[in-house]
Amino acid sequence: MTAMADTRSQIVDAFSEQLAVVGYQGVSLVGVARAVGIQKPSIYHHFPGGKEELYSAVALRFVEQLRARIAAALATEGPLEERLRALAVVSAEHPTRAISFEQRVYDALDLVSEETRTDVSERYVSGVLNPVVGLFREAVEAGDVSGDPWLLMNAFLHLARAIDLMNEPEGSTQLVALFLDGARPR
Image (cartoon, rainbow, N blue to C red; front, side):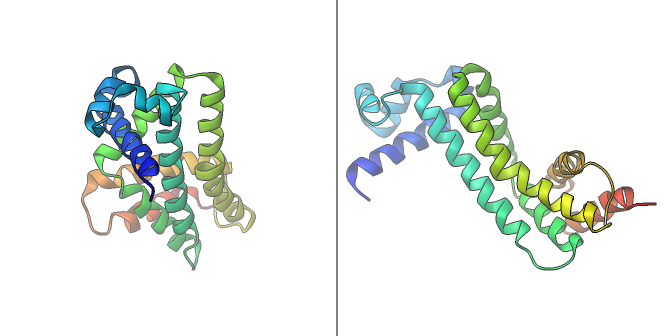
């Protein structure tokens, strides 16, 4: 990695840390520069768009990491139950801090330009939500579950987030059973 790429990465990391703690409005570019050991004007060398461009870099990195984890879970071989368990585990792997960070990324969407908001939102929907909707669409078409795939995706992902609160080794299995027993066609 070049020195310039390393500095850019350090700036993104420092911005990410501040965003997690104080939210978008509380992020200080002076504080980011101080954390990296550079002067504030150096941030603009790497990110001419300043705070919003940095937010975009942080948000898109987060979305990409989540997309990759979701894709790996959905690539699990086996019946619907196995794929949902893998998806539940990925959702439960989010430590409380990551969930808080995700909320900070989401909250900042109201504070950035329409262009940034659209870019981040579209990548989240296409990379994270649509693949899960696709899983449920396939399951509906196969007769494994019934209902609207978007509603099923939303309900499942919200339930899966609760696993980290359960602290049970079999939490994903229990969650999938609960979800599917309520979603199976009658």
